[in-house]
Length: 374
Image 1 (cartoon, rainbow, N blue to C red):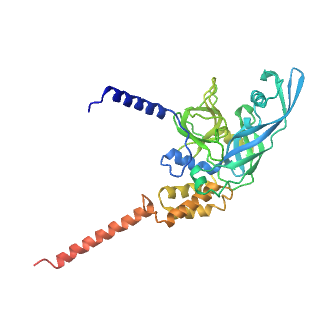
Image 2 (image 1 turned 90 degrees about the horizontal axis):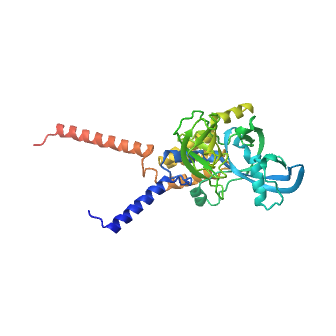
Image 3 (image 1 turned 90 degrees about the vertical axis):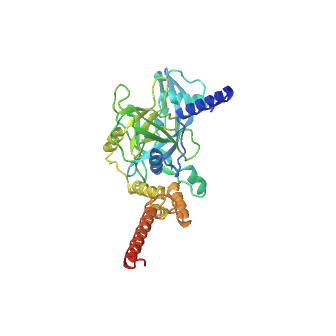
């Protein structure tokens, strides 16, 4: 087929644009219609992920022996996720931000007379002891179940990393059965990961940003950290980096800057912090149950999915996502779609049908043999 020059140029431009677009990691909206293994793993991890909100009251700034009264509040916004019964992990800098960031925030609030050098500045602030968490949900679920909304959860700061440079903090919630993510200490370069965070989001619907572990011993070969090839943004701090099993490989700490690549704390640093607090990492029944329910949902066994999700609803009293998925699975089961696609139920029915056909054929052959044609 001959393509004229203008048309060929147009095709080349369109192809180039498509290639360029595919090279850009576009955030994914969590959806229960996902088919990719990594995206499905991130969806299963959603109930264990929280939007973090709070405020830090800055009383004054001290520099060069001079105290500047401020009395202003700066907003806290980030991500956290469950790692043990009643325990949630997030980035320490959310509740104890570095001086440079505080000065930037106060400048944005039009506070006058602030010092320029963070190194010689001291911030006097009220320590953050409590934060508000909101469990993640999916956009499609939020639309389908408009009346089902997440309930805010109060969290208190209970333990910070011994080394502040580790940039991790544990929060306590009063929900021992709440979903948690299993930590995976194994770090291998090029392991695909999905970061579930609230950076750039305006609601309790996070964005899923995909990439991979780049270097497992980052920051001067310190194996407490790893660099990642995920375009995380402000607000993703504290987010889990999950693999295609839904296990957390680490906690997002920093987005890309002129000096550094995106960085996460490795899972073993979170485990160390939990041990110092006397807590043990593991998945609760809320997580394993939701995984099993969604596996049935994606296999189109909607009756089984609806039953499994219904059993989880009491445990997930504050999780709009689970209640909405249960409603959708129940509606699909009632509509009779259970065998419309590949599923264990459908396979069993087809197997029985094939067996019945085979038996009928054998009986037919025997009958012919007993009554041969004249």
